Image 1 (cartoon, rainbow, N blue to C red):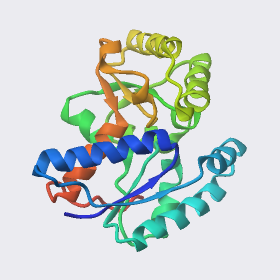
Image 2 (image 1 turned 120 degrees about the vertical axis):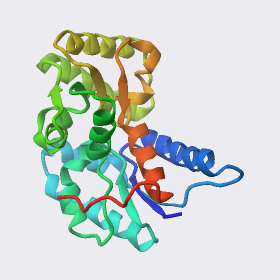
Image 3 (image 1 turned 45 degrees about the horizontal axis):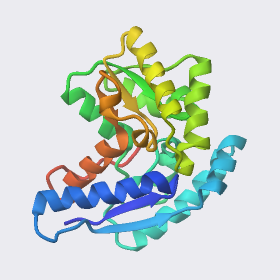
Length: 238
């Protein structure tokens, strides 16, 4: 079994989901008392969040690259960046490593293509919804990406940072997310990509009729497949 490296803490609310999903995946595959081989570095999210909103992505890349090097030194065979947004600096992190990053958007695109999904709604932080670093990797795989309008993006972003990253799961916010899903479906979305690793804590399959692609679940599932040799090691991020 290969050792999975985790760059977590962004936020720890979703990192604990990764830990559970990876161990459950290995247990289900191998049975008995088997669990995943993991190396985890969990950063202080307050520092990262401040730099995100200042637009100082270079500083975030430096912090995360150093953390990723620690994960590599601990024996990881490949790395998961346990957050959608910080894949913005995945190429910079990869440049400092000799192990590959399993890119979250690539794993998600693969799952969508396998199911024949061609047009999706994307919910995430403003950075993920508005910038090209994430959606372009879906588009490159032939998947059209729709996002909420400006007010909707603001609402989705606010709930992530002010509630979900702080462990608050509110019924009223779930209803707002359901409204955003309905609006994107009306525009032609066939499915929703939960493009923030916390959103799956709030929006559940039973809440909407539209298929939900929880990127945390997809990323963890693909990582287990790679760790057990059932999928190849990923290409180095470009």
